[in-house]
Image (cartoon, rainbow, N blue to C red; front, side, top):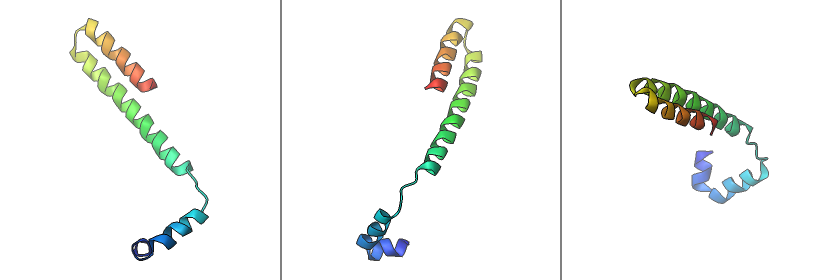
Length: 70
C-alpha cells in the first residue's frame, strides 16, 4: 500500500475514491479522548483549587466546570 502511493499516486487515490467513507471509528476515538481530557482537567483543577484561598478557588472551580462542559 505504501509502495503503491509512492510509485503510482494516481492509482492509489483512484482506489480510495471507490471506497465508502466510514467515520465511526475516528468519531469514537475523538469522543473517548475528549471525555478523558475533560475528566483529567476536572481533577487537576480540583487539586489546584485546594492550593488557593477559598475565595479564589470558587472561580477556579467555575472554570473547571465550564471546561468540562465545553
